[in-house]
Length: 180
Image 1 (tube, rainbow, N blue to C red):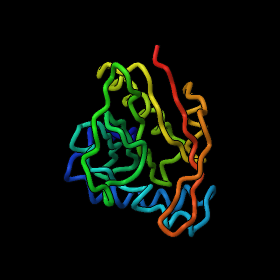
Image 2 (image 1 turned 180 degrees about the vertical axis):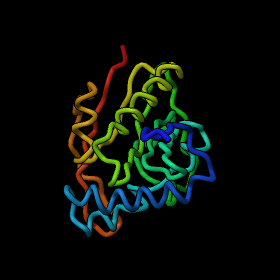
Image 3 (image 1 turned 90 degrees about the horizontal axis):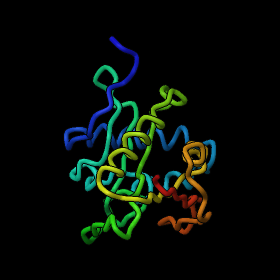
Image 4 (image 1 turned 60 degrees about the horizontal axis):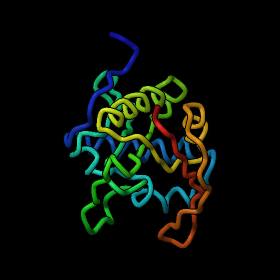
């Protein structure tokens, strides 16, 4: 068996495993950058599964021995980040002729960090974005994710504080990249 996880599109059957991975990754890897209270408040509204990405076929899973060890993808929809639990209306489609595609929701299992899975997910996402006709990409990075995106040509557009349901905020970095 290879020690390189398979990269494939996520499916509805993966949703429970994706939710668990997102929760574990958030509580473990992001704890280096945010407080426990921030992370608890962010689970769901900021860090959660967006089923629309799975339905659109734009969300990927890295699978090793039947276990999802990383996930992430892109979107042709308006939302820049967040799970879909509190979304009340359809997330509108973007126009590749005028809008930027979105990189969305990258999470890695703690035992698999620093093994290039983020790079693989980003490369697959960028290839799909190009194939869909987009010329620009935008994303909202966590403090943990900023170095990955910076290393792949993304530039900081703004540092913002995303509001959380309990009145706290969470630092996110808006980044962008022009495709060649």
